[in-house]
Length: 157
Length: 198
Image (cartoon, rainbow over all chains, first blue to last red; front, side, top):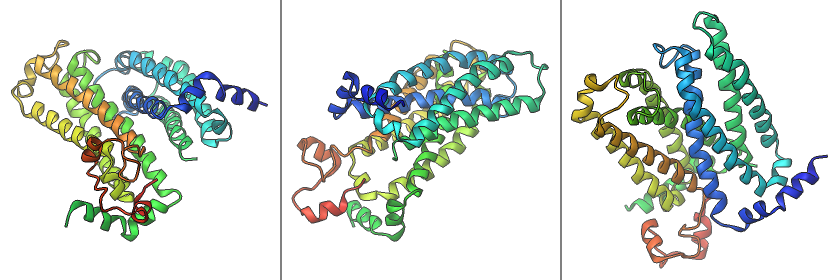
């Protein structure tokens, strides 16, 4: 059903340009990976805190507030660099289990981060139980890790 | 015994061949390397950004050093172990890879930068600027160097996968051959096909 769209994307001008270049794919990919480190730090800082690890003396809300611009900035960079990578090999992605796993996890991670996790990290410290905070932190780490692993495994197929 | 011969010997060991030819082990080790990168470089970047005074400005630098650095150090151990295994799976090709060599130099510089900062006079006076949003110049310099070096390390690490300048690839330039330590005079086509990595 979606295959014709993926074929059209792959034969588009951006996909074609990247495929015809020796350097473009590796360069965009490498920047994608540098941004992964930043988003990893921004996500894990807050999730560790929710789990009761790391910067325990700082309020969750303060850490989440400080991490927010880095989370959003690196996420936008990840998407901006990831889309052209996808465009250059859309048909391979269509048949890749890792790709669909990553996209599903990414959608869930974004929804979870900007709804449940956002509410929990912005609430007053006493509003939610430590167990609830730990659950939110664990789900967030699980979802974002699936995105990362899925992404790495697209390349192994 | 030259390093080249040592790598050749390593590449012929049973475990190296096993890792290289394994269906899942190499991919799993590399995935662990990448996941741990998020933790290790991610937290290192946070400390650097704090040293630059651009984020976590209300968090004392000493808090980051005592509560985040242990995770960074643990993650670094995982990075090194998984990285060594990845090298061990393809030793000879990686040893001659220009991006691997660049990464090794950047790693040394990052280590030197961290060591100089942590043993320097500014860090010893940490109590004086621990809670300051605007950090001393030396701290900002160390943070900026560290950020640039880790970005370069991640970047060159990813590029090790590409064989443009490999000794088995057609020669690009004598300069690149020098950096890669290629000796094209003694290689036969049979040997080169044996040596080539992924």
